[in-house]
Amino acid sequence: MKTPFCVAVFIGILLPLAAAAAPCFAPTAQNDGWELSAPLAAGFNAAALCAALTAIAQGEGNIHGIVIERHGKLVAEMYRSGKDRSMSRALGFWPPLTPTVDFGPDTLHDARSIGKSVIGLLVGIEIQQGRIASLQTPVLDYYPQHKDLRSPARNAITLEHLLTMSGGWKWSEAAQPNNESRLFWKSDPVRYVLEQPIQAPPGTAWNYNGGGTVILADIVTRVGGKPWLDVAKTDLFTPLGITHWEWVTDLHGRPASFAGLRLRPRDMAKLGRLMLNHGRWNGRQLVAEHWIVESMRPRLSVGFKSPANQPDEIHYGYQWWTGTAAWQGRRIAWSAAFGNGGQRIFVVPELDLNVIVTAGDYGSMPMAAKVNQLLHTVIGTVAE
Image 1 (cartoon, rainbow, N blue to C red):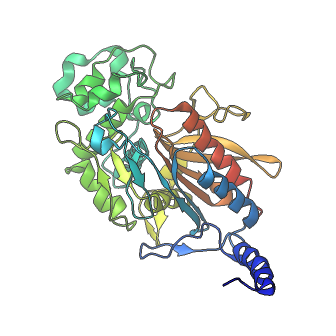
Image 2: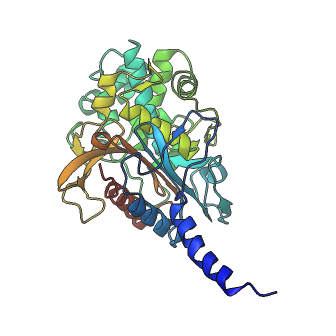
């Protein structure tokens, strides 16, 4: 039976109007502590934001998820299927097969080195509780059993140098096998890091080093009297309402502090909101405000721009990255937790904006540039 012409015309007019009125990538209501907001109410140009997310959703890049939050409310979320080489299956090495995963709001995703930023927060918690007195404490003071490693250069390495990745060790996380991959199987990873040759005076040069994060996590365990993973659970994740998470272990069954965190993107957003709220969550000060400020304060230049067309270099704080973006004719600051493959927690304090990205192109510099550009695109859709 044919549809009458007048009905067909009516449908042809009505459907586009309905589609235009429908929310674009609206977040779903779940019992996870998040309130929801429409883009327009949150100060976005709704059409521009919808267009940006649609381009990602329909594009060929292996981006798995995006969550956008502003003023404490989720504004948009997008998930899709994609190839993923999870560390939970590979222990830091690429598996022979790359499965396709159907990602959604409840799917855990590798956060990779976002875990480093979490370890930085745990150090702040220990300082807040008085268990770490000073960031100027020499690292080797915590390890009298390694007194044979003492030298003038190593004696000068402090906790602050670990936080800013400026310990001065010769260290590479480029082509496999590298220093990071060896952390998965070394019986004493702390000593492995400490014994590396010194190539620069501590505090003078930034060099990406997950080994320093391993030492920071171990010091959290030493001063707190319980495993750092328990500190993460009881003092950070549980108060944030993060109940579904994993921390991948190494070949010795130890949680890989430098790269093994797995979270839902909506829970990554809680970490971003914690930073934007100066360490507070639901009225409770989980991390001291001054630590949040210091973590996001740019210190050492990392020596590159991302995206390359930006005028400012990226800098590093306390296990958090920092940079600037253009908004309404001026530059505004952002900070971020970065993870290999395109994992990001971007926070833009001046806009009270939080952008989460997950992706699956591990070891890919083009993907890193793509997700960093995505932040600038989203910022461009903020109207007020």
